[in-house]
Length: 432
Ligand SMILES: [Mn+2]
Image 1 (tube, rainbow, N blue to C red):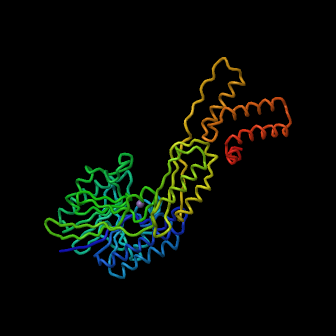
Image 2 (tube, helix red, strand yellow):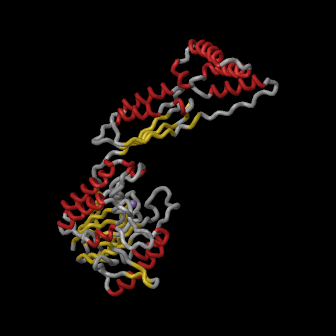
Image 3 (cartoon, rainbow, N blue to C red):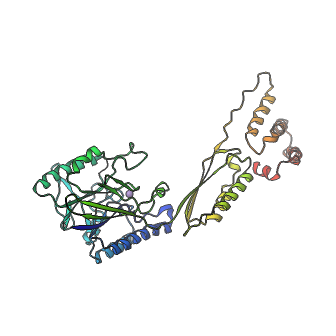
């Protein structure tokens, strides 16, 4: 016997990412594309492994739009089986979530075993509740998100399946769950709560297809564990490994044959760019290099992208001299982004002021420190000694209680003689 199904997870409907109404719509549009594809494939059922919604509390519009897609599947006679993700779980002591509402509307078979007297109860789905459902020869068990309690719940589940299957083992079994298993994330695997393969091992004789959600990066292990990933990236890192839908075809027999295809859908581009600012001595040099880099970037986008631009390396002038709105404008002109995030990650050039020699007078010491500070700034490097002299002179005039007008007049004189030597006038305005 042959069975075909679609497995998805982490739709995060209702997420208004970057406070962008377009991003809110993106999440629905990608889901809609997936549903249209599922309808075309005429699968026998659909699995949603948690986080259909981004939040526990959703807006009426989010509910309406989600219902509309589930309704299309219902009208095609395709049952949708789901479990609850961590994002949509009701608060402790609240019994019902919006998934329960969908279940009551007959749009979703929501699976959720429960504990009674310390024992995990697995009952067939009926009147909107239950731990498993039989769809022809396929039995689907389901459990939501359990966080740190997951190892215990999975152990109890294995024990219950052992008992249940001793009586009768259904021809093909699926476990739908919202959980992370070790090895699904390349980095950080040790820092997050994840089930180990050792903890999952007792399930293997009882489950033919482990349908997971929760980790937004797609994964597949041993032709047994499947995690489709999120259809839309919830952050920039996720955009690097796009999620999709698993289309699965099973030939039920001994042994079973499972063929799976991970299908992705067109979605808004997320692009990452960077500029190393280390070579530049002035903001103008940096702007020019940025203009050249943006012009050289030939990539075209089918719709306004989300852009992350970082300035990194070593900054040879104070970050206050850098006009970030100018940088943002250049980036906006090139990419016409939906959202842009610009990060100034460049570190100020490291610098240690040398301990002044002991024989120096206080004034000489001050001038040395000032000169070395100025040398750190690319704009003043060539004339640091002269500028340090001007600062020293300025301080003396203040101590002599000269009038402000006189001080400014002298400062203009000294500065202009230095500027004539080649400093760009603009730089002084910025420095001021
Ligand atoms: Mn999620």
